[in-house]
Each structure stands twice: as structure tokens, then as C-alpha cells.
Amino acid sequence: MMVVKSLLLHEVLTCSDPESVCIIDTHEGRTLSYGEFYASASRFAGYLMGLGVKPGDRVGILLPNGWRFAASLYAIIMCGGIAVPIDYRSSEREVEFYVKDSGAGLVVCSSERRVDESTGVRVADFLEDASDGGASVLGGSLGGVEDACIFYTGGTTGIPKGVVLTHKNILTVLRGLSAAWGLREGEEVFVQVLPMTHSGGLNCCFNTALYAGGRCVIMRRFNSEELLNCIEEYRVSVLVGVPTIYGELVRKLAVSHWDVGSLRVCFSSGASIPEKVARDFERLTGVAVNVGWGLTEASPQLTVAPLGVFKPNYVGLPISGADVAAFEGDKRLPMGAVGELGVKGEQVMKGYWNNAEETRRAFNSLGYLLTGDVGYVLPEGVYLLGRRKNLINTGGYKVWPHGVEQAIMENPHVKEAAVVGVEDEKYGEVVKAFVVTDGKITQEELKAFCRTLLAGYKLPRIIEFRDELPKSSVGKILHRVLKEESENKGY
Image (cartoon, rainbow, N blue to C red; front, side, top):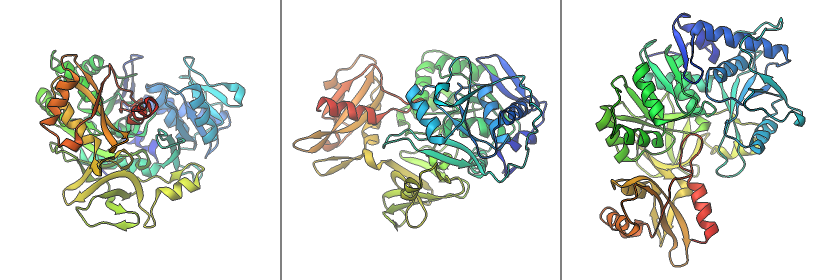
């Protein structure tokens, strides 16, 4: 088992052979060794200090996936700043909010996309050959600054909140994932396909690769065929994705051949993966999908299933000493009882940026972060039933959308499915399903199929076929958007 290598995230870079490959950027066709990456980040850190960045200053990053994003992030924390990754797909209005809310006075950009400097925000272009301007990098001493990054939540329950993650928070997750996956020091090859601007994409993939002394193949964005080519060409051993990515890979692998024999760990988190997709992926690759559970406020990972173990609703064992329990308000429930899951652990956030009230509300009186997820805990690990706010109450019966989605996905003509509750005069709510198919099944045929798998009260009363479902930048289906669309239509 690996141990924490440092107290500061960027010190991880100095623990590997400086000559070994660290990054392969497929978009730019650029390969950097650990020594080259550290030198580039150090130079840019000095440049930022020359621009006046001081310990504790927030610095935004508005760059796409790539080695430049990685170097900018490490440069910011090297000089004591707090990195604020900004989703590259964000609207101008969203970017303005993130910058203003975090108090970032400087944003690292490229010629491809820039922020509006008329708002008073300064722009720093990432310069590969930046001179440090005579400034010296602080190295291991950040003047007492423990915060590393501020990641913004998706704003699904209101205004996005800035989650403050410390170096210790992040390193705790890297240590936990390395142990759970049994990573081989200096041997693993990761592929970065999720956005690096999100805690899951960054910490579960790129930063874990560096912690294990491995190499990371960075893709600009997800494309199933390009991803399979990367796995084959670079002999990728660790794939970190979300359910929609695995669904796309299954569809490609079912009709064409790629050599994916190098894969050893295929991790899926962020949402429940349909059982059919997981079974098909294992059949086509020989590797079982490894699942876990977490949230941005936990840096982001809380649990990981043992490799090779896949069970419905099961999300694995707590990592890095995390304490997970079910609660009813402030009352801790006995093992096996269903309630809202709460957690304590060193990966749990310091709090929300400049938002003491929301920070206070996030924790119960026992100091557990309340996750908003409902489930139960058994000796073998944690079982997740769904988001508390997504529970459907139809005629007094409780329906978890995930169970209905799993049943719909069992049909071979279904590619994707999302289930929400919509208002109904008679039952209060009824189940509505949004489905993407191959065009070879009707709504009535799909309803008949569901009747063979689901109790009557769980059946979708409304099925709407779609060409595609709305997704976040990390590929998660946006149930909230579908529910709002239905409410606006009046059904």
C-alpha cells in the first residue's frame, strides 16, 4: 500500500523519476517527462508571482483538457495560490459568476478563449517559455496556505457553491484510490477523458496517475473511437469514466475490434451505471466495471468497490478511513437502515467559499457532511438508492428512478434512459421516462416490456422518445433539466 508522499500536492511530482513519461497530450502531440513538466510548471509559477500572485490569491483557469491546463494548475499551487478551474464549456455569464464569486483577480487563458478584461479581471496567457521574472518559487512553504483548489458545484439546487479543497483533502483521495485499485508504482497508464475542471475528472484520473508515478494520456474531449484508439496505442491500464462513456464504448466494441487487453481498472462514478451496460462491457473486454460513490465536497471520492465485484446498488467500501453512516436528521441509524448518507473523513471539504451559512447547513450536529443521497450501510460496504430529492411519490408508493431506469435499459433496443416524477392530479406524481432507442421499438412495446420487470406502481405512465438526453460536461444525464421541461409542458 502506498503512503502519502508529501504534505503538498505539487511535491508529488518530485517523487518520480524525472526522466519517466508523465504526460502525453494527444491533441497537441506533446509528451513531457516528470522533469519537464515540473520545470514548466515552476517557470510559470515564477511568472505568476512576477504578476503579483501571492499566497492565498485565487487564480482562475479557463483552458481545455491538456498539458497546459495541468501545468497552470500546478504552477498556481506552487506559488501559494488557490486554483479555480472553470468548466471550458461555461457560458460567459457563468464564467463571470465564478470569477466574481471566488474573488479571482487573474485568469489563465489561451488565444482560443478569454475572459472580459473590462470587468477588472486580469488575463495571463499560458506561456510555455515564461520567464520567472526574477521571482523565486516558494517550493514547500506556502506561507501557511492549506487550500489548493475551489471547485464549483453544478448548481442543481440553486446558485453554484465554491467547494474549498485543501492539499490534505486531495492527497487523501489519491492515497485511497491508489490503495483500492492496487496501483503499481510507476507502471500504470491512465487516460484522461473527463474534464480536468471537475474534481472527479482531475483527482480520480490525472492527479492519481501522478501520485502513482504513472503516465497520463490526455484527450481534449471524449470521442468513443478516439478513446479506443488511445487505449490500444498507449496500452492504457486505467480508465476513469462515467456511465454514458461506458455505454458508448459498449456500442463501439459490439461492432468493431480494438485491442483493449491492457485495461486493468475501469472505474465508473458520478452516477449509477446500468447493470446491462456493466455486464456487456465486462463481456466485451474481460474487465469488470469498478464502481464508487462520491461528491465534489469529498474531493470527490468516498467509496470504491473491490475490483471484480459488481452488485446492484452497491458502491463499495469507504476509502482512506472515511466514516459513512445513514441518518435521519441528526440521528445515526443502525446498520442496514435506510436513510440519508452522511460522512466524516479527511477528504471532506473545508467548506464552501465565503459562504458560512451554506457550510453550516451542509453538516449535521454530529459533524457529518450530509450528502443528499439515500442508502444504507452493511459490513461489506455502502448501498446507494438514489438522490433524496429525486424520489418519486406516486399514490403513496415510493419509487427510486434508478430502479426503473435499470429495467428500461434491459431492453436491447434502448441506448439511454432517464426517469423523473411529474405532477399528476390523481396520484400526486407519476413516473415519466425519457428514452433514446435504436428506432426499432414503439412506446407501447416498451411499456409492455417494462410490465414484465416492474410492479404496477413503478411503471412509466409516460414515455417520451428523444434523439439525445441533456448531459453535463462530465457526461451525467441532467434529470433536473428533464423534470423542468416536463413541468413547463404541464405533464
